[in-house]
Length: 76
Image (cartoon, rainbow, N blue to C red; front, side, top):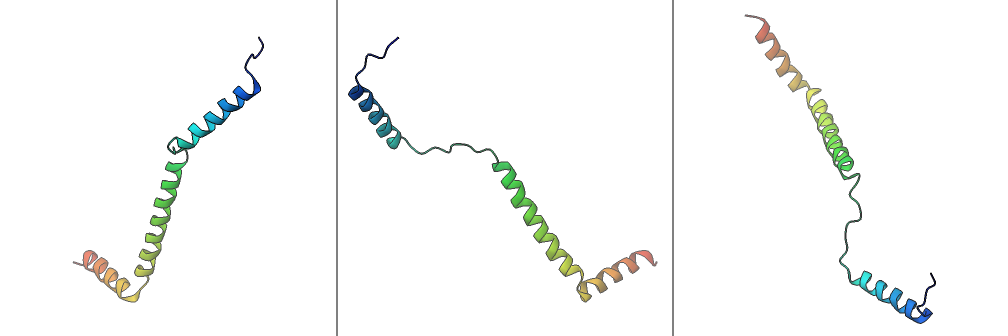
C-alpha cells in the first residue's frame, strides 16, 4: 500500500495532533515507586523518633526514675 496523502496534509495532521496534545490536561504519567518513597519517609521518621528516645533515656533523671521503678517492682 502506498500513502496517497500529500506531504502538506500529513504535516497539518501532525500539527493538529501537537495542538491537541498541548490542550490536553496534564496527567501523572506513572506512580510506580510512590509506595517505596512513603515507606522511606516512615522509616526516617521512626529513626528520628528512636534517636530522640535514646537521648532522653540517657539523661540522668530518666535513668534514675527507671532504676527506681525496676527496684520497686523487684523488691517487695
